[in-house]
Image 1 (cartoon, rainbow, N blue to C red):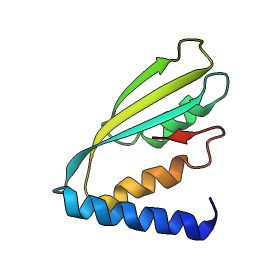
Image 2: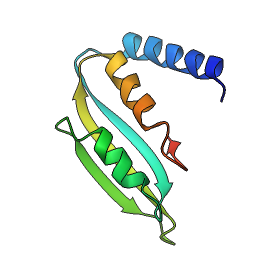
Image 3: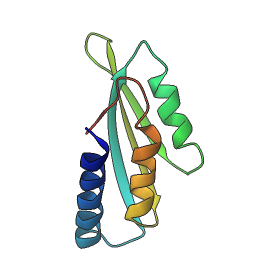
Image 4: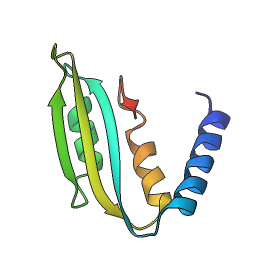
Length: 95
């Protein structure tokens, strides 16, 4: 995804979140990363400043780890900030 596509994606996400959610609100992030790298630790470090609930689960073959994070955020901009902060994690899939 190039820069313009990312901006468009996050603009649409912000729009949808403003339309469908009352803020502050509990938000659930779901990510998948390769288990053999530092991805899980990198994701956790992005959310360590908040009172987040983090649930990790290995895939059946152990190659991937799913990371679910729920926390209360003030507004859609805060949601997007976290997505942008984890965007550099190698092998990250955001769901």
